[in-house]
Amino acid sequence: MGKQARDRSRELRKAQLAIAEQRGKRRPLRIAGAVIIAGLLIAIGVTVVNAVGSGSGGSGALVVPKGATDNGALVLGKADAPVKLEVYLDYMCPYCGRFEQANSGEIDKLIAGGRTRVELHPLSFLDRMSRGTRYSTRSANAVVTVADRAPEKVTALNAALFAAQPEENTEGLSDARIAELAQQAGVPQEVVDVFDDRIFEPWIARSTDAAFESGITGTPTVKINGEVFKGDLYTAGPLTQAVTAAAGQQ
Image (cartoon, rainbow, N blue to C red; front, side):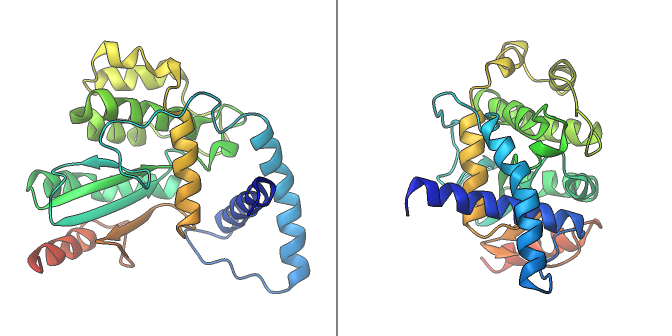
């Protein structure tokens, strides 16, 4: 497949995600009638093309953060823990905020227990929902920078960003506010000072594309040992029970 075809395929995937958002949380794309689908994809595709053309993917050299997986994840916890919990999220996604509120404390306990590792996938597909400020990319870059240079502070920054989560269709948090939250979360100043360098934006863009190509269709998406968790993501308990059960089977 040529570059032009790959770009077109990527734009269509992003357009499909935009349609899904308008229809609710992580619901499958089922719109009756090929004409309706084509019309919606064309209309949304224009927005996607404009976003790509404005440099939303980052233009610097590709730098891979320390300890990242080949499929674009940040590993939290023991790398050899028997249960793998994959979490795909976007810091502008309101449903991800609900997921974080319900499950972050339990996930921290699972990591501390040593039998679960989290593979965190910070995505940037909701950049278009922040009025041109590319909030999803900026916040994800802060998290990835911390993962690279102060990995013990990732969960604290992740929680802080969701606690102060902006609404969709706003400009999102400013760079200064992201830096302030990082400082309050205990991230060393020398690491915070690197946020403005945007070192990991190309990696975030590549990882977001890889997530789409792997079949991810919305956020939050959670997998346990490679299988999508289909239980309640927004109430504390069900996810923890499923992870605990998986650990018992190891």
